[in-house]
Structures are given as structure tokens and as C-alpha cells.
Length: 285
Image 1 (spheres, rainbow, N blue to C red):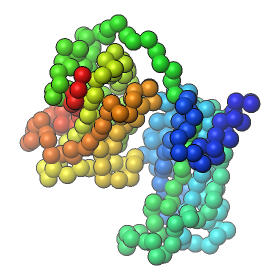
Image 2 (image 1 turned 60 degrees about the horizontal axis):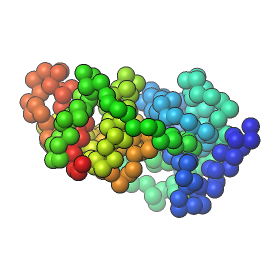
Image 3 (image 1 turned 120 degrees about the horizontal axis):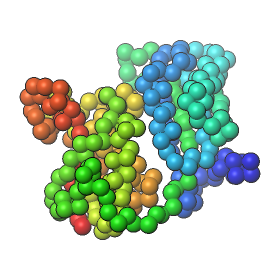
Image 4 (image 1 turned 45 degrees about the vertical axis):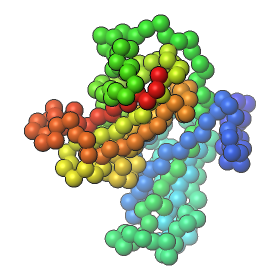
């Protein structure tokens, strides 16, 4: 119980620091709601699966808001219901209830007003109808460098680590229209972690690509609620590597949208899947 209280206090201490303690990190998931609704969408529920994949989460704070529409009392009730529904969803997914240290609705978002409304098709402001799920987790301790990996199932073979080359992560697969990897891909992602640990001078650029467009542009990410799907998928890989102790200075990420397809015409479903990919460019070794 003392440790849980300590990590709850860290929510507030981290916000006042430019750098968190060396063994602790804080991050945020944001989920959005339709006008006057408190129920989580299917996309939001899938996004919460991310928390189940992150090791050593110590505490979670759930804070909910509404936009400027409606009265203060109604908005306070609506925001509280959004936070409670988020907590219930996490618990139903078997996330430990005791790690959820705060669950609160704060009513209208501080930046929400008629003057700040830019989308004229939205009566309010979608970005302010949200729940912020802030989580504190312990960075994993360094582990001994692996002696080798199973190259029969490897996403990257050691002999392919040539400066300037691009390597395709074919076994890392994402949920459709989202920047969340399928659980079955995690074992292959760990192979990339092992490669980065084994070669401490290896520097990479993580490149995201999408399928099914011919204009070169990016696609909409239904989890993050923005039109940067390829960029978000590249950042997803980047974030996982950071969680497992890989130095940020060794990595960068970029999204190419649909501008660099392997199969420009996409005549089959297989060709679509092969266009929907993440590549690793070897920058230095």
C-alpha cells in the first residue's frame, strides 16, 4: 500500500519537473466521446488494451471532461460518468482495480469555449469531450545482451544490418485503422529490442506506411482521432522500444502515408497488407 501511495503522489510531482525520476515514466492515453455521450466506443475500448501490454504500471489516474455545451451541473455529472465508465472498462479487461488511484470528472475542459470552436460541423469541440488516462510505470531494468536470435523466425536477420538499407517488419501487424499492434506481434517486436541491445551503436529510422490510398496522403487513425495513421504506427514502435530501455537518441520515426507503396495498384488483399507496413532504415551501426 505504501508503494501505491508513493506512485499516486508521483502524478503530481512529475508535473512539476522537467525530467521524471530515472526509473519512472509517465504517459497519457486519450479517448474521446460523442456529444452528450458517456459510453466508450469500440475503438476506445481497444485503445485501453494498450495498458494491458505495458509492463510494470504502478498507478493510473482517470480524469474526464466535457466541452462547453450545457450547464455546469450536467457537465459535471457527464464527465464523472465518462470517468467511471472508463474505470469499469479497464477493470472488465482485468486491469488491477487497486492501481486506479484517481477516477474523477472535472466538468468543462479549461480551454473549451465557443470562441475556441473551429469545426463548424461540430456543435461543441470534440477534442474536449475526452478522458485522459495518465499512467505511471517503472522503466524495465537492463537485461544481459542476448547471444543470438532465432533467425528462422526473425523479423530482422543480423546479416541484414547494412547502413542505408531498409528492412520490413512483416510480422508486426496492427489493428485495422489504428496504431496498436496485435498481441501476436509482440514476440517479434521483442526481437527488435534484442537487436538494438546487442548492437549499442545501431541507429535506426522507423518508417510507417499505409495501404488503400492513391493520393500519397496519410489515413485517419481511429484510436488517436487524427489523420496521421502511418506516423502513429511508426511512433508506436518507437514508444515500445523506449519502454524497454532503448535510448531515444538512437531512433527517429516518420510517416510516409501512401506515398511509397510496394504495390502501387493493390490488386489483391495480400498486396494491401504488404503495403500496410513498418520499415526500419539502418542509419548507423
